[in-house]
Image (cartoon, rainbow, N blue to C red):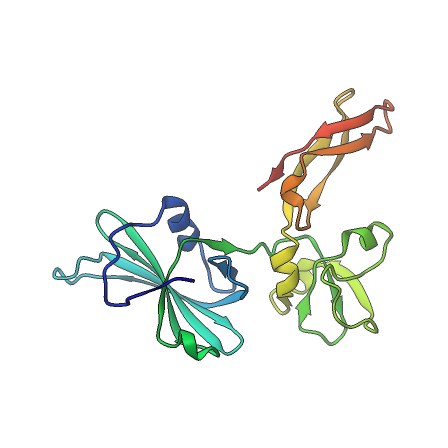
Length: 226
C-alpha cells in the first residue's frame, strides 16, 4: 500500500466502479483492499452528510474494518465533482503502519452466498465444500480445514448463517460464481445450473456434456455471472 499525507487533499478522484463497490459495502461483509494479504471483516458502516458550508466535502461513508488486532477505517468522501477513497490506520499490529493513511485503488467484496457449506461440530465458522470431494458425496472443506481428525458434514448455508462466519481462506480463494442454466444445444434439454468455484473460475467458458435425452456429446459455452 502506498501511504499519503492525511492532511493533504487528493486532487484525482477514484473511478465510478470503485465508488459503487464501496457504497455497496454492508456490516458483515468480508473485504480485500488493494490486493493486500489481509482479509477484512466489516464491523460497522456509517454514512454522514457534511452541512458545513466552509467544508468542500458533501458527505462521507466510513467502514470500520477488522483483521486480528488491526482496525482500519475505509473512508469514501464525496465532493461536488469527485469522490476520494482512503484507508486510515486506527490500530495495528505493525508499528510501521501506525497513524498512516493509504490511497485506495481497489476493493473486493468477497462472495459468501453459496447454497451448500461444510461445517463440523462445535465450530463457529463454515467452509466452502471441496468440489471434487462433494462430487463423490464426501464433506471436506475447500481450504483443507487444518484438522484432519474433524468430522465434517454438508448443510444448507441458511441453516448456519449468520450464526457461523465464513472461513476467510475459503471466501478469499474459492471465488464462487453463479452459473446460468446449461442446456443441450441439440434438443434444449436442461442439463445443469448452480455455482462454480475455484481460483481459476474466470478461465471457465465451456462445459463438456453428454445429453441423456439425445446423446449429444460435446462442449457447450457457459457464462458464469461474474
